[in-house]
Amino acid sequence: MLYGEKNKAKFHKTRRLVIGIGQKKHELEIPKYRLRKMSMSADTAKGLIESLLLDEGNSRQNMATFCQTHMEHQATELMAETLDKNAIDKSEYPQTAELENRCVNILADLWNVSLKEEYLGTSTVGSSEACMLAGMAMKFRWRNQARELGIDVDTLKPRPNLVISSAYQVCWEKFCVYWDVELRTVPVTKDKLTLDLDHVMEYVDDHTIGIVGIQGTTYSGEYDDIKGLNELLSKYNREHEDRPQLVIHVDAACGGMLTPFIEPEMRWDFRLSNVVSISTSGHKYGLTYPGVGWIVWRDRKYLPKELIFEVSYLGGEMPTMAINFSRSASQIVGQYYNFLRLGWDGYMLTHLKTTENAGLIGKAIKESGLFDMYNEGSRTPIVCYTLKENAKYSDGTPVVWNLYDLSDRLQMHGWQVPAYPLPEGAKEVTVQRIVCRADLTSALTEAFINDFEQCLNDLKEAHVLCNEKKSGRYGFTY
Image 1: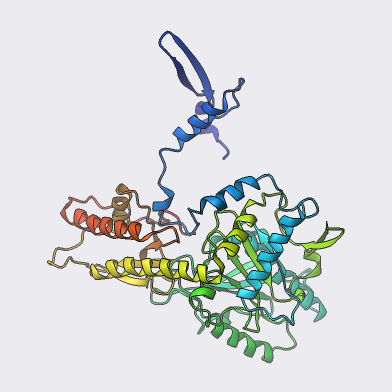
Image 2: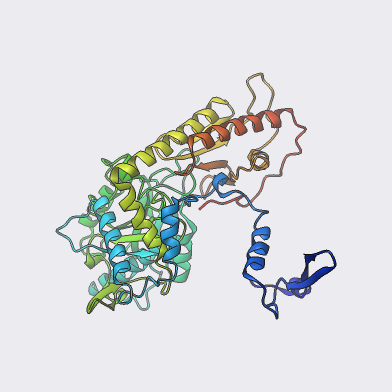
């Protein structure tokens, strides 16, 4: 974090630590924003940092984040033992590269890739990097197709564009800024928070590099109708054979490692002809600590060769297409541990239990009678709701607080539950979202429901000075 003019004064402030017993005391100067001249013991440094981190929320009670906050100690030990391994060094760490290769194949199989096609994929630093790679592949492929059709892409106006619902994750906005692509967002409505298939094709033209379908939106956890989108694209491509062909990338950060186990019959993946790439977060429902994502292309032809670089691997060559370079292999090891440890049945049972807990929370919130539900947690382990207009308690007492007040009250019990406005098309609606993860046990679920109900009662009895309506997001929406 850079410091500006107003922070220069505190830049030179130091913290004084007095250590010792009785007459033998030593005072240490500890600068906050510049390097201290002298060293200190490892235990002292560790203790100082631990004390600084005390004033933070409990990650297990963070209902805002999709990111996994607990792994088995065997996995944690394995990851700690491999922190020093560089994932990019395929020749130096061939067995680590083999584990990555196994993970890619496992995901390709989960997503029903055809063995007749030459699929390939890679690990990434979270699904955001995976989305960047998917966007680049779509842009380069579109550009190559356009050139073959005689379109002057070098002086082209308008710019190439990408179509997605307004309930997108911010990584797509970053991609379009970084790679000079126009982001075309199809607005959601307060009654439908997914991609509007009735209007999506109105945003498409000859400069569209692709459409993104979201398998689990950031805002509510709902799925875009990717099967229906695939049918629209098939019809479009048949009618525009002389133009660049439209393709779908599925942003499955949330659902990529959830849907195959909960609803394996759902057709959202490579069983659909126009789905050419899928990305996911290993650190969400892949159950791995933050830092790993994955992307798979159904066939090599959908990843332009100029984006693939060959590296030495076991005396041969291995393709790599990552944006990032040096990074620890520990998250890859953690992901493979989960695949090996849990198997298909283990993932299914884990996700079913998580979804069951989410359903219990959704049921309790709905039964309060104060909220309109967007997602009750029965399909995906995410609960999303808004406060009813002119909401009243069962005894007729009117509600005088808002969701920001409820967020504050829940935080008094340690629970972090974000409140935020919906995206373009429904910005007037404020919602809360609860993400249930595998580390949300039955006991924690019961504790949360009890605390939630207690907060509702406390707000009813309290003299509430309401938070003003906020224009931005409150908490985290990733």
